[in-house]
Image (tube, rainbow, N blue to C red; front, top):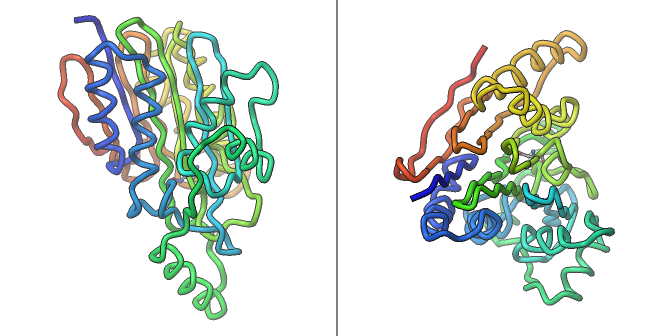
Length: 292
Ligand code: SD4
C-alpha cells in the first residue's frame, strides 16, 4: 500500500481521525478525508468550541470560522462569523471551488450556505446557552476574560495519490465580540497546504497566531528541507520569545504539520493532545508538552 497519513488537533478529533484513516486506507482523497474528519467534530454537541454545541459570542450567538485548502491546486475557501450552518467546513470547501468569492463572512456567508442547500440549524444548544448565561452573570462580578473554552479542530491529510489537504473549524473564542474572526479561516495563519511540500494547521489564540502567519511559516521551512518537527519547533519557539520581548506576552499556541512523505511534527506552548495515524501506525492520541 502507498503512503497515507493524517494528523489532527486535540483528542476530540479522534473519532474523526478514525473515519479519515479508513477513508485514506481505502484510497479516498485527502480532501474527502479531511472534510469528514472535521464534520465529525462539528456534529458532536459536547465539544464546546466547534460546530454544534460551540460556545457563543458575547451576544449569545454561535458564530463559526472554517477553512478548507486543496494542496494540489492551492485552492482555498473560508467562511468567518457564519451562523446556523451545520457544517461550516463543507461551505468552505464549496467556496474553494470558486475562482473569486472564495472567502465569505457574516451574513453573506450564511446566505451563501442557505442558497446552496447546506443544512441549516440552530447551533446553540441548551448546554452552551446555560454556560453563556452563567458567564454573563459572572462577568458583572469579575470582568470578562474571553479566552475561556476554546480548541479549534484542524487537520491535515495525505492520500495515496500524494495529494494533501488541510481544514479547520471553530466557534472561536468564547464571549468574543460580534464579528470577531480568528486565525482559523485565514490562509497561512490557521492553515496552509501544498502537496509538493506539506501542510500545517494551528490552534490557540488567533490574534497571536496571525502575528506570525505560523502555518505558512512551517510549510516554507519544510520547503527548505526541514523535517515537520524541526519546522514546527523553529517556527514556534523563537516566535514566542520574540513576541514576549516585543509585546510583553504570548497566548497559547499549538501547531501540527505533515510533509508529503507522511512524516509529522508538533510544537506547542501548552499541554496539547493530538491525534495521528498512517499506513504503518494505528490511530493514536499523543500528548505534546510545551517546548523551549
Ligand atoms: C481562534 N484559534 O479563533 C482559534 C481558537 C482556538 O484553541 O484555536 N482555540 O482564535
